[in-house]
Amino acid sequence: MARKTVLVTGGAGYIGSHTCVELLNAGFPVVVLDNFRNSHPEAIERVRKLAAGSLKLVTGDVCDSACLERLFAEESIAAVIHFAGLKAVGESVAKPELYYRVNVGGTLTLIEAMLKAQCSRFVFSSSATVYGDPQEVPVPENARFAPESPYGASKAMVERVLTDVAKANPSWRVALLRYFNPVGAHVSGEIGEDPLGPPDNLFPYVAQVAVGKREYLTIHGNDYPTRDGTGERDYIHVVDLARGHVAALDHLDELHAATAINLGRGIGGTVMEVLRAFEKACGHPIKHVVGPRRPGDVARYFADPAQAEKLLGWRAEFDIERACADTWRWQSRYPDGFRTR
Ligand code: NAD
Ligand code: UDP
Image (cartoon, rainbow, N blue to C red; front, side):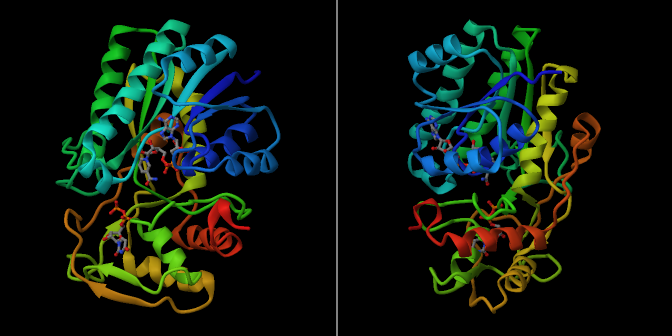
């Protein structure tokens, strides 16, 4: 069956670019909408080199209703994957109004344009951060909702909006994909995570120490109740995550209204395990010191991924070692990301 066109908002970003590659490989024509606030147009050029097929780029803002209406009038869009948004937890605490404007306001603008164009298939980038400090691990989808930051709250709000819109419009099908910790890069080393400032997250930070851009990693606490005392997370390879989106599109019609689905491996890795795996990948020791716990961090956090397998037939394939090897290929080839000369 011929694949229909998918609009990918934020398609030039980290997860979006990898998803575009997998969509094109699966035969979907793709239209990307991105304002390049946190990405580089070169990412789209690389996607074009990595995968054949139709990829159109529209430079614009998801909060711009005229731009969206034009886009839906000009393109025949069958489904939307909505990545575009802001994702820095700390910045969201400092500028909550910006986060609600872009993450909630942008999604509302998109929903209104979709209703007008009668496009009723929506895949949303939610986050495990909606669970806050979970009461149990592995975390199932029906765990308590307790987002702690404005960023997390913006994801929870959008989930609520989409749930209500799907209820009011019975033809709508929505997948609320709650990502755990996306890491890794495309196996080619041509696309990967490209943080603009100093990274907050473990993987890009370790990668920058390994390549010599930063002096050492600070381990945020080694007195947690985990097997080696360092924090434990569910690191999911970005290509697995990207394939989860293709699976979501393929199974959207079978879902009821708006359905929340965890995308994780269901296996935790500690900070020390990531560090050792990265040392193996880059072939040299990575300097590190142990510091105090980071405020707001939880000890252990990993997904119950059963629902994704049941509803989407999807399961993560790649482990932390593979994610480190792929991240290192990208980081060592392009130390300054897409700005590397
Ligand atoms: P990213 O910043 O690399 O990608 C987001 C893309 O959206 C960027 O290309 C950016 O330029 C674009 N964008 C931002 N605001 C826009 C706007 N107003 N209009 C048009 N484009 C805009 O982030 P990512 O890591 O690829 O994350 C993608 C989505 O997944 C985000 O919604 C994020 O909240 C969610 N998510 C990410 C993680 C993670 O750890 N990376 C975890 C859970 C959920
Ligand atoms: N972490 C760390 N040093 C860093 C960045 C992160 O020790 O420079 C730890 C952090 O405390 C957590 C894990 O690595 O236990 C993952 O952190 P990240 O910010 O990547 O993900 P999140 O905490 O948002 O799940």
